[in-house]
Image (cartoon, rainbow, N blue to C red; front, side):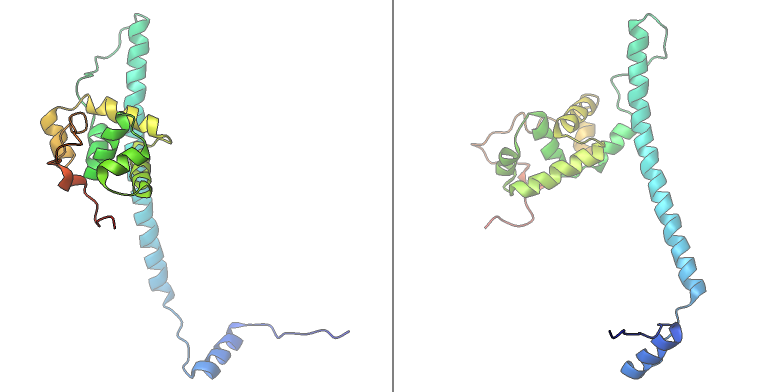
Length: 198
């Protein structure tokens, strides 16, 4: 029985083999610079994670305060007055984070349209609609389209028409409710596909 022995690969052996093959001595990266760059990337990553968590916490806190207020009002316990007619900063931030296409999709979700129907209105494929629906759900921090539609509807009820037009980058609040398939949509340029379907 023959056994094969392979020499241990050390850094010296690797450098020698590299020099034989390429003819150039390998350079060792500056350790101080790479550690500094890693630290900066880690710091930036942590900063972004904290911002995301802060936004999610604001949203959850708003929901919790509303639930406590409703519970307190039902039991006769005095609670702080909450203005139900105005949207919170996190809700405004959510609406601002949606693109005009995602606003269009969210409005159609609240009306109960299926992906194929949304695709037909927007002149895109079903897979593109799925991407938009996923983005709306992710930004609302929910798992299902029904939950996303419910949250979107609750937030939109608190926003006036002019403010919504600004937040949606031009799409009116009642765009899909007044949508007519027989007439050219004057807002098509806001949600039209990047490429024409071929």
